[in-house]
Length: 440
Ligand SMILES: Cc1ncc(COP(=O)(O)O)c(C=O)c1O
Image (cartoon, rainbow, N blue to C red; front, side, top):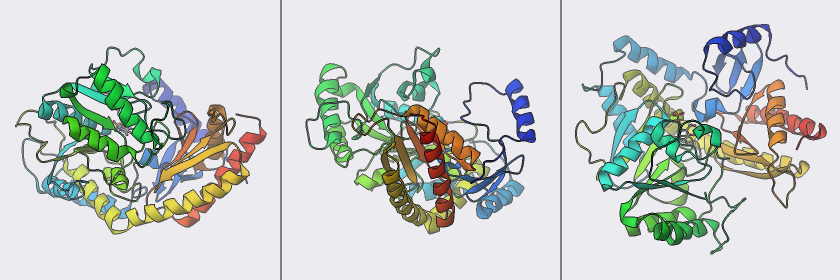
């Protein structure tokens, strides 16, 4: 297997320009300089081909520049680009109807649109406060919900996300995520998720937050940036029960796990649990900035003027969103389920050959490969993980890390078996090489 020369001369030149003018607050795990892409393949400015197994962190849901999405954008852009959220437009209503029809609850749904994941989370926080008249929230360690002040108050993944930005919004209490691979609470039930819910009820609601003041629990159904961690099966049903008992809203942040990625519209559907508010963004418009919330109609009771924005319902974003939802429903959600199973099976075989792989986990095409220093202690092998991502890049595969020691796979939902096979072969080469180099 041949290594690419990356970045090439054009790439190096571009990186030099970027470093002068683009905010250094963005992290770049390796030096990929995008030129163009199609489906699950991308090319850098020096003409090198890569397999994209992360799809812009689960954003290019329908693959790079899917012709139907591009056509929808073209057609809408010839009609109008913007009219402001002060007025009505057919595409806004149509997209909202379509999105509302995917809501993972029985009750009729209403939709609020913004431009990003963090705005979706801000909207959910405000709606929960408004609807309940309460001001306290529960979030989870390891979570990532965005970087504006409200969402940042819930994000609890790395100290550098908060360093220099305190004080964040008050009223957020964090609890351990129901991670069965690395539990931190002593079990009180066979299902670790039920242990976490008991902790919330018996410790948090009895020592810190009066239940009557608790507006909502905000959680990623599968923790994304935190490590692609899948909760135990008992967790969400128990959490829903506890929320109902105290009139607490359940907000699921499906910014990374939603829109067909796990083989269902929303990851929460894997646990037959109905949330009150769903946050969405990333894959919803295949790469055009769009985010928002889907809430039960009875919960979205705020009046005119309570929350709005300039670009809400932007016609280009809605046209891309509509085309995306149609593609996901007609073919890609099913493909995500099938290719996810296929990838998990293939990774299970790879795991047998590589003791550094502690766990392979995920649903659909949201898959994490966790590297450990040793199987018993499950100590994260962070350096090994970083080196594997770097080597995979040099061999022509784009992946991204998540958590302390996992590689995440979140490819386009129309990825083919051939690309998966090619990508996993390269990934295994990278794993073998990093192990041989002595990284752990
Ligand atoms: C689960 C989740 N919520 C919220 C966000 C924030 O989204 P954005 O970067 O669009 O603001 C992210 C981004 O990675 C995310 O993964």
